[in-house]
Image 1 (tube, rainbow, N blue to C red):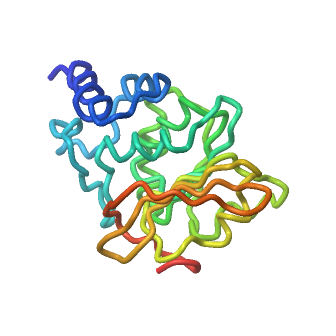
Image 2: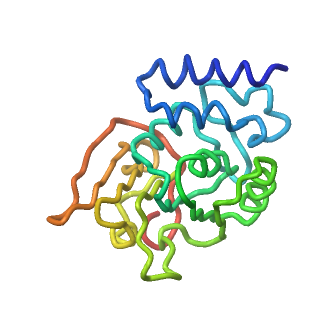
Length: 213
């Protein structure tokens, strides 16, 4: 199976064709081997235009949705990113290619363990994964503010913890709505408050925790 060819085709037909033009983002998706982040039984479907189950009732999102969310973060190489929902580690790897460091939180120990194994295959090292309630953010270092926060599960409201842990000028991308239908929202933190933008409908698994479902 020519995964490299499939990966290039995925970028061309699923991501670039739908309007994602950031060259750094496209390069990251070309370089990260998505088939290493799905269950072995689903590897032949790794580059399909849809989400795939990865266990514990969770999914690896459709490639385009991952690309859209990542591109909305407008990442720079000096940025620190908070990722809520490590999942298989695929999005973590993409973020690592674009940012200084990724702090990722996963609710399920089994998925966190699997993600670490998957990420070991990439030779990337600029990440930290912990098992915790993602709605609390990363409170251990209260002096740290994140340049970007990306949430890979649907919240019924935007947790105040994310707003508090966002740096000035920082971007938060999160699906918000009901358990069955959400809108993809980007918040940008400014001196006079938050700018909110809506990028349309989406469907994610629910964000479980103290400040959501």
